Length: 172
Image (cartoon, rainbow, N blue to C red; front, side, top):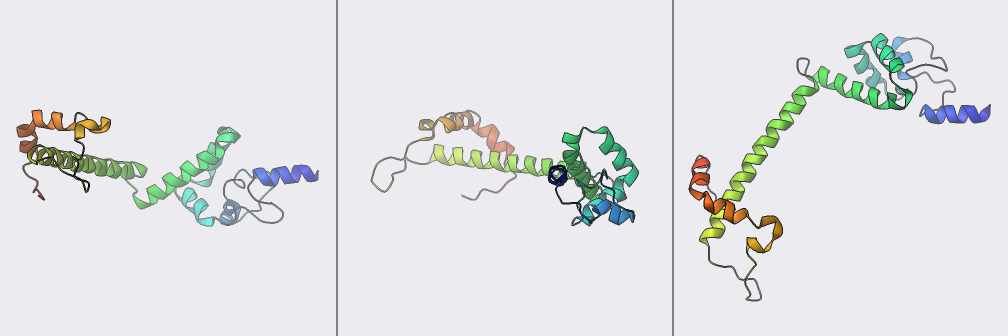
């Protein structure tokens, strides 16, 4: 009997002696030992359930949790909480708006990287060999496997590459 209580409280992430879960506190009802919300909406996280309830409703969340296998419920609740927070911040697009913003930033960074590579290739093609502190030559890009074709690919299309990025000022 005691072992069952210990295992149950470990599975539910908190001891259930007299504390109601955040959902039952929010809904102002008595929290039962078999409460579907208790393992996932701890009493010390009331805002988590409030956001999920505001977007999805307690009845819908309960139905979702009943349909999902028990081993996937925690991930389901975390997904619902993330989507609810995103919907409250951006009611039209929700988490899709955040994804679109990150994709736009990724495209901007890819353009910045292409510009930097073009400048680096132009600089490497136009500069004399560099010497390090010991008087020996610094290895060229071709000696590094990750950069082997970098200079060649830009030197073949150098006029095209420069035309593509002519709108950006050079820092050299």
